[in-house]
Length: 613
Image (cartoon, one colour):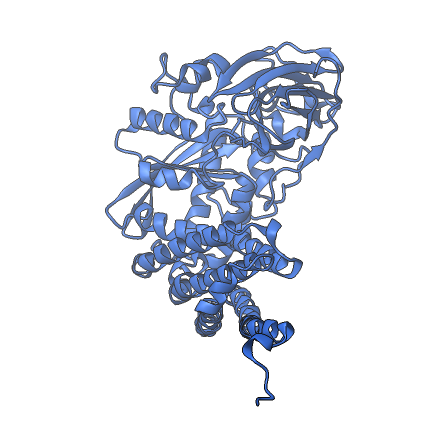
């Protein structure tokens, strides 16, 4: 007799529990694995956060050390940065972390953290370390100019390191740009934004360093002698790129040695153009562009102006021109502030404080013969060049002056070597026509004197712009407004010399200022209208490089002001951004413009009138 239960008598509930037990165990194991994985990832994320925080601090510290010229400290910081960055990359790239990236909700955050860590490691090993080791050689401030020579050997030796750094920087930028911040939690998104901001801020500086290493050796004659023209632009008689070309100095470079070869105050004109100026430029500005040195730069395209001026020089003097550098007395005043006063053959002492007034105003009261005026200007430029070439200013001071001049559009450089010109074309030194984007209508406002004197010493100007989408098709309407003022004394007609007033030579009354303003619209855009005082204003219209152009004349008596506004319709812009490139001018009151920033552009509203729509 058995008192146990037969198999058929086992309660159904217990059987169900026995069957569920393996499933429950499996679920518990999965949960345990997930918890352990989450704990593993969380712990490593905490450690990686600390490493990344230290690494980003090191990036900023290394940048500051390089900027201050402390290369030894930069190298030490770079080594510390590499340790933190490598550790962060290792902590965020193991198989468990990579598996976690496949989990919904927070997988994209893990991928973003890993990408930031990898990009930081790229910056440390491929950008900061190479640059820290080569910083002294490629920092323009460390380049010394002594007895007319720069030692190019360190700069040439640093070339490979700089090239590696530039490649690494681009790779890191691409890694960060690939992150979609819209999918991220706030702390991770902020970290990505901070990284992007840091890269954007460092990009311009790295580009400057790379361009220095890429351009300077060749331009200073590392591969053989070079010949350059330094053209002095006179903004008292304004031209689109800055001012009438008052004198030309030929300099030669050979393995770092810089010598002044020749000077010429003026040459030409020619009955026929000596350079094949494009037909659209001739249609807008006339044949004078290719016939008169003084008018080679009525076009705002500096590369074209430089090619034309160099062709004129070769036509007159022969030889080969490898490039053109343009600057004005405002830049000379900056160089004098860096190098100190210089003595001129006339007995004058040229200083940073008196250079603009002496060269652009006083000289015309002193000399009535234009040849004497040009000779005075040439001697001043030569004296400043000699002082700088002899080591009268530190590399740091010179770089600061040239950087400020570049930002103010008062120094331009063109190279006849295509490879070098391609590099220059992407910098502020190139003086190219403004380039629009889908987000921004890039406009231009350029001034050319038509008085035939030096009255632009008294010309005041202000520029404002705005843009708005007024049309149903989404096209952007941009508007630019220019106000010119004649700040000459009321008795200018009798107190200023005929050379300054123009002497009514071109039909402009003594004391008045006649200015031609060239308004350039966005690429592919259309000219909407030209007005002054609410009424239409006659203009010469055309195109330049696919940009609509309107050229108008404004004549002002002493004390008079006039405003001209022009509208353009963009065909490629999707958003109402607007920027304006403007000819660098004088203040109009005898004071020296402050270098370091482009001309301030005011903001105006664009009303959506029926005409705009």
